[in-house]
Length: 134
Image 1 (cartoon, rainbow, N blue to C red):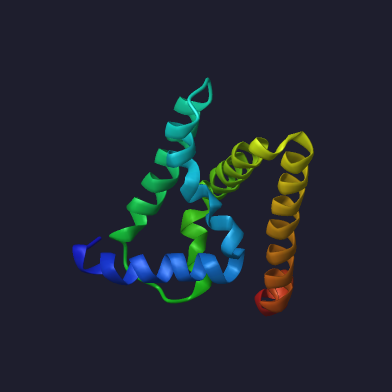
Image 2 (image 1 turned 90 degrees about the horizontal axis):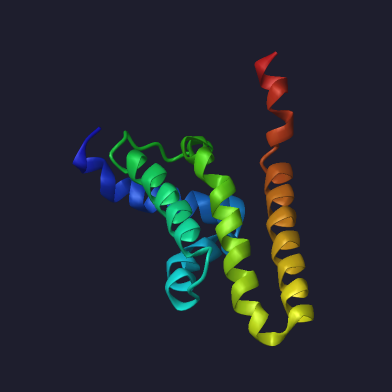
């Protein structure tokens, strides 16, 4: 752990996340804005989930930097919360346009996340890693 690692990790992790998960995965960054703009029973939960994501990311900002995308594995505990927060932000913002628009937005968001993930996994031969491990 070293402060000198922060600058490099601030570029490596977001770039690797964008390359492997796609732009839609960054919808989780809207969580604090959604939490403060749309007060309700989910406000505290949104903020706690977001704080968890930031904390996991923060723990590895100081860690030795690795340029390879597969070091995103350090951030895996935050991934479910990233996608939950992203879907929540899309849903909350789309509700203004009615229930049908909200459902369509959620379906498109989910499909985009899954399709980008599947395409990247295939392109990076993630499911064939066992070949090299035999």
